[in-house]
Image 1 (tube, rainbow, N blue to C red):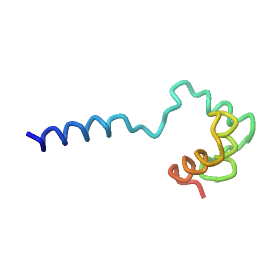
Image 2: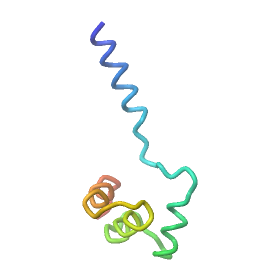
Image 3: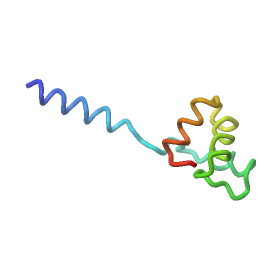
Length: 71
């Protein structure tokens, strides 16, 4: 019974994980205002857009961009 509960809890937690949280496309349009050829894999561009468009801070944006694969 505990194993089934753990599996269900894990499935619910993983279902909430979605790498693309921008439903309306507003972040993409905001990014184009700062960088015409926006490259989310470029760390400088990714952090800049995160701070400006997603109202993040350097620490969380750097972590987010690293997790998204920026270098």
